[in-house]
Length: 179
Image (cartoon, rainbow, N blue to C red; front, side, top):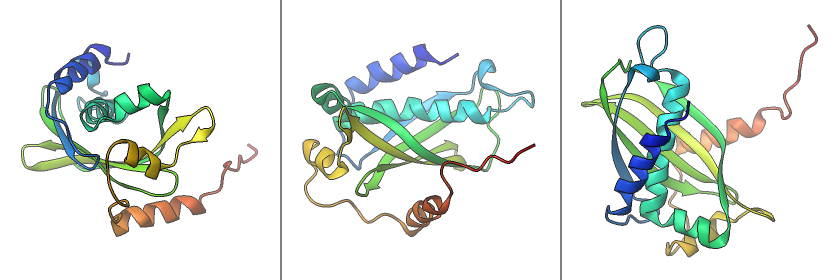
């Protein structure tokens, strides 16, 4: 089940937090509950993505994106993701999450998120997100302007550019092999 109570808690607490610029970092804290674990008693990989949702919603609040979405009748969708898992998160471990927009191109905003157990990074996610309207994808430069960001996107890191390039080579729709 989706952790709605945790989402509401993060939403409410972020409303009183200081605003962030579009490229600012939101830091949140999460606990790995028994219902978050897999059969090996560690944070389930699918639940990890759900917990990353719990970091992006407050980030959207603090940057003003959520208000812009509502005011303009826009939506936001994840159009791609890549997650690197490096350390186990066990039941009742407390993790610190960093969430930030690292830049955009002509179609997508790129969100970098990471979970930390003390000084150890347990996982990192790169998400390609789209702001949508009834007419399709909203130009991220327009979204940035609505959020009072002057100027172009920060330069995307080479590893992000490499991911974008590699993903563009991936066939779509995927080929289904006959069994």
